[in-house]
Image 1 (cartoon, one colour):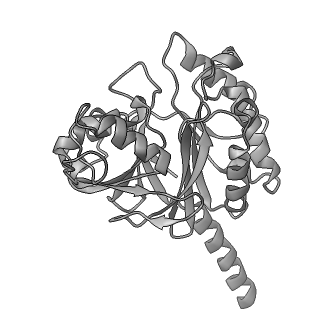
Image 2 (tube, helix red, strand yellow):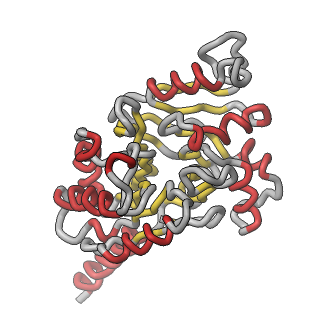
Length: 315
């Protein structure tokens, strides 16, 4: 009887641990254009930590102000959060709706690191922090270099620690209007993971296998219930012609990609991973169409989350 009791306790303890939240995500910007106060940017940290990394940086200050209003930070100043809580920036690609907040807030920011694939970092320093466009707050590129931001070049599929946080990151290249690279970032905290994808086209349309390679990498974490969430873009409804996608996804294309991921996973495991929909284009009734189309054809039973600017999500 005692042996049975301890066996049951171990099973219950394992189930509780696997269900615990590991990450918190605060959306600072959820759109892929059209509203300069609400562009792609998400703060992420371990659930019990205030040391955040920012996944893209289209909007920073306006999103933090919303988050303060909703009680997600102790500070009453967005600038204090920028200076104290954001420990670095993971930038998926250098389009303005993903970097404008970083650039505009750089004069008031504190020293920290900017993590990118080499091709992305080169665009940031050559085109934005170039003195002709903006003062060079980085430690590379045109002189004089003010050195506030340390530019860290990431290597594909190689994990590194994120300075001043409890997290690690692995970068995977994505195809976003060939030949330009975007990036998926796999965050790790202890033995749990969070996957964020910057803008990406589907493999079929981009003539690529980059998403397939990513799905193969993360499927083992799905099977072990260690992948706590996926943040992935859906920019347009299904009515958007393939030739006008410009390296983005629709609900149908996302459904197809998730089915490919599911093919690498054990039966029924993927539906336990929440999928946060990012980068919606706020044009006409696009957003309502996207939400409806994702819900209507959801053959895998995925729990889709539609983020709200400033509202914390725990995963």
